[in-house]
Amino acid sequence: FHVHGAPLADPPTDRAGAVIVLSDMTRIHRLESLRRDFVANVSHELKTPVTSIQGFVEALLDGRPDDPEQTSRYLGIIAKHAERLNAIIDDLLSLSRLEEGAEKRAILFEDVKLRPALEAAVELAGVRAEQKRIRVELSCDDSIRAKINAPLLEQAIVNLVDNAVKYSDEGTTVWIEVQPQDKGVAIRVKDTGCGIPREHLARIFERFYVVDKSRSRKLGGTGLGLAIVKHIIGVHGGHIGVESIPGKGSTFTLHLPQ
Ligand code: ADP
Image (tube, rainbow, N blue to C red; front, side):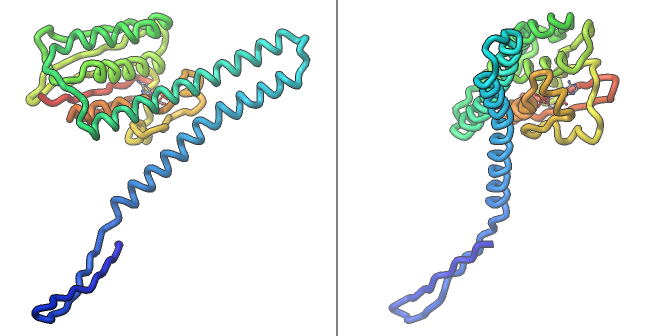
């Protein structure tokens, strides 16, 4: 608690008193500590690739310029780390734009047909899916509508489909199914991939949380994808759920209100 006191005097009556204000700082301290953790996480996540880039550049500068094989291997590694930096920064910018938009209430929502937005997302995620010969099947009645910001919802679906593709075997199928509900719609993204162990389920939506660090890195992950999805659904007034069986697959469900 913050305690703030001030004397009060009431000249005509000469009555005196005091005001004491007790402020509960729990929430503010919690937010400050979350922000500190976030800055520490961001710094750490950015520092790792930068340190690697620095190391390989120094090795190149010190090394034998007449070894083209080594030179090209090092340049390849540097390019990979630079790509990772780019991915992290893109995701961080998406998050901060979302936060700013939500704060200023500057995000526009329109009552539109869902299918075109989902088709656009399937197309965007399609290249990565094709590389693994994964089919993305969309089942959504033409008449289903929802109040959405289409580009944001597309980004959420792309992130979910990208994950489904990343964590599934070649030649499998990913399903996107839309069902009207009592008060809104449910959009499910289903895969038959590696699944997520139960003890991790509650934390996968946290920023930078990944189940298997080396696998996520190898697949080009930043640990921010699901945090962005959760945020996007949050600004739509909806929520996200996940069910997963290790070794069998995962289903992420977006619940959008009417
Ligand atoms: P990443 O960039 O590592 O994919 P995300 O925030 O998108 O980060 O996801 C967090 C973690 O949740 C991933 O590292 C992965 O372990 C797990 N995950 C997300 N989607 C799936 C999925 N469809 N199948 C299995 N694991 C998943």
